[in-house]
Image (tube, rainbow, N blue to C red; front, side, top):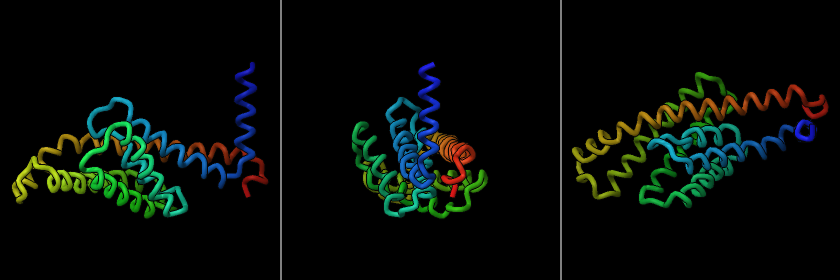
Length: 192
């Protein structure tokens, strides 16, 4: 009984928060939770990075915060995982993905979200692997070295694609369901 009563009180409390205030809390929280999932063991490149950038760009109205919150969440998880030499390339690609998310504003549907997830994955692959080729000593600094770098990165690209689609579906779908559910049960005065 106490749990049921607590859940009811929580639901009523959430309903008393305007959608605007709710978004200021829930959207960054979703991004931070996604970043924290990077700390859980996972296959290589199976992370929510692309989805975080798209989600932040799409739903955070303040453009500066749309860029800063996903980068901040990434930095926080990278702090625990370890900083690396390609961090600038990873963060640059994430900023480009946030811009893709900004383009998605008012166009959120399954087709557009999946196209953005695939495009973001490709952008991430191209930028970060160029960074690996450019900054590491693993590959010769010529066309053959660049091709070798991209070729050896292809197995990781599959995980990036799959995780981007899955995490994008979870983050966007979950948020839209939550938004509609809370809006449906909100008193009329809160809906305006």
